[in-house]
Image (cartoon, rainbow, N blue to C red; front, side):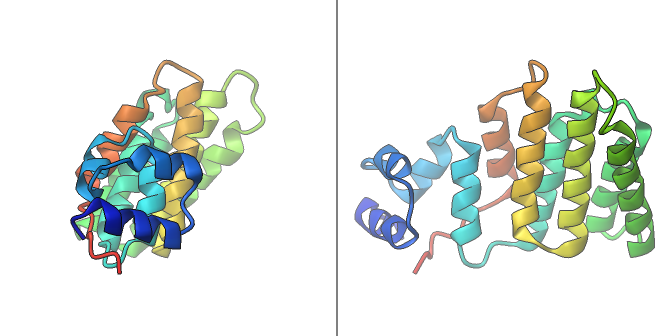
Length: 179
């Protein structure tokens, strides 16, 4: 799919929101992908595309969680991301990944009630969701990991939609055969 007209028709079939449709204007799908500043819209597109590499989605979820790594006060969160990355390239086992996922879940439980630790809690939740994405092969969990990362980022100056969009674009190559 190269043309704007085909892209707009596809977006209509997918029930894209009015604001999203208006933002497309006369852009080709690739132009929209390259210039979009809304990570939620890019993730929306990805969920509707065919033939998206699930490993890329998993790497994207981990990359989202990495954007708030400076907020992580518990080493178990960072360790979990390290193991998830190693697992995706065959350097860690599913047992190691499940242990890391359990540790990430414990961090969420440890920090969810502590006042003043919203950034730590939210970043730990982003890690937990990213690891769930890696283990469960669920594209929607990548979106949740992105949402949790955004929540963590709102607690500090890390909030930057362009960074999130660039993370998506560097992790995923879209397939514009949208029929």
